[in-house]
Image (cartoon, rainbow, N blue to C red):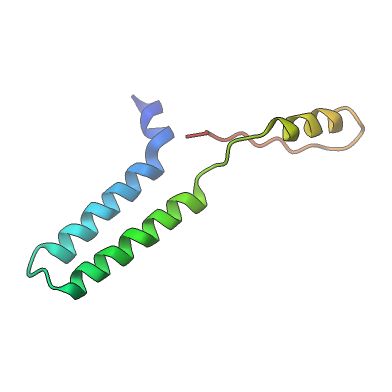
Length: 83
């Protein structure tokens, strides 16, 4: 169960923020300014999600890394979840 939250914590945070923005902006009267603000919040959250999610590793990157390992140069290995 903890692994699910670890892998999907950013996505769950974005959904919670989106629902909170919907509740705050749309709980009273729903005029065009509130819908516009809600749309802007939605676009910003989507852009943040797509900008900050980890990218899929390509096989070319792995081949370059294997070529550097053992060649006498220090190598920084970074592990990240692909979710």
